[in-house]
Length: 246
Image (cartoon, rainbow, N blue to C red; front, side, top):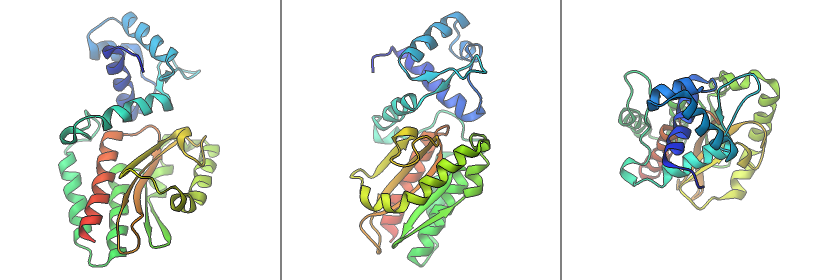
């Protein structure tokens, strides 16, 4: 997509700020961040809006990312070199680091002697670390953890959104069996989801080999507003740790 480097950085700042504060991001906040005038930011935001990467809610002067904006952001993350691929720029919270979260995930998984316990522990940890709904396949069953965490997010104050998520979850297990994505990490953002297209959630899943199947899955389901860098990093590591330990 043909946008300038500054527009790209403004888009990324909107995505990251929105993930943290769950409120539309205004020009004043961005002007301080980029050390330019609010008028300059508004002009750049208008161009991003014309490109379909951000939108303006009816009740706010700020902007929020669109599914297309999130997709541009996620593609940029995955195009970075492996060493720094999933390094978030902010939003990790006080006292937490990516390495610490990955280490906690590895310790929890490796302490389990049974395959099913290891997968359950990995799913539980993903839910705990990301605040999303964790999911994983154990044989022919789908294990879910953290439903209350998911529905505690402000996006799900609207009952219709909850119904959309429920529809997706009801059909997720058979869809995973049919999908068999070829890449180790798959991200389906908002309307990209084959089921529940209007539910406003993103599904981030990693495929791994287990004693149950060469096509076992682990991942998270959460609102489109989330810390993609850290979540993608943790989901990928969870799949790798499980495959290596099992």
